[in-house]
Length: 277
Image 1 (cartoon, rainbow, N blue to C red):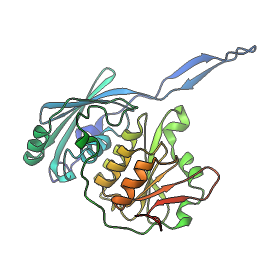
Image 2: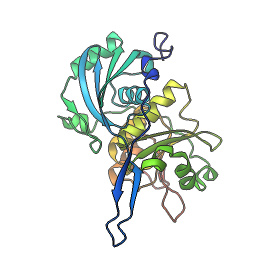
Image 3: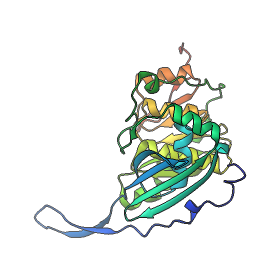
Image 4: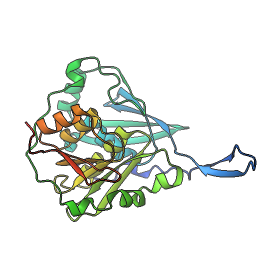
């Protein structure tokens, strides 16, 4: 973070009330009643230097991480140093993020100005041109695959790390495993893209070298997640669901290590691969 944003942000001081438990009735002969904590969802409006840019449906946790990650992975800023300040405010069920960015980033943002409205299930909404859906990305420097031991029983360890999902379910997670094989960061959200943005933001805000370990996503691996990983400079992305063919081609082209972690089989490295072109 830049000198002006290295101090605690106003966003850090916003707290959320404990999740509410909702009553239900089981639809069987016993008709048992119970209570369950459900996943939270809220609208977050993001403005850069006073100009509204996007409204996203997110989970109301680690919002400052999300704003930083969203800005970086969407190529709205080139580095965290271009984010000078984040001011979060809340009105009822909605949040607003006022983000101050540097002149270069703001000029570039105005040049590519477009209407963008996001939802939890949408990764490329608002994209109006093929060039934006299939952007030019800087190719990464190749990195070795993580040791196989760091993937051992990873699914079980992820379940233990997902604190919010244990309460309510319905949440995706993005996690960071460090060079020692330990899960050191976990960010959760109703949106799989949001979860990865939160993780990217947390990595930058904590000053971690993301290429020393690897990121994990619990959701389907789609092309927009590859875009975010490459833009964030991650060396390796591990997905609990199988990637699409386009994901594999882009990962190989941009030297992003891409690993699928099946339920009952050994981890599968699709990129790099011995027969990769």
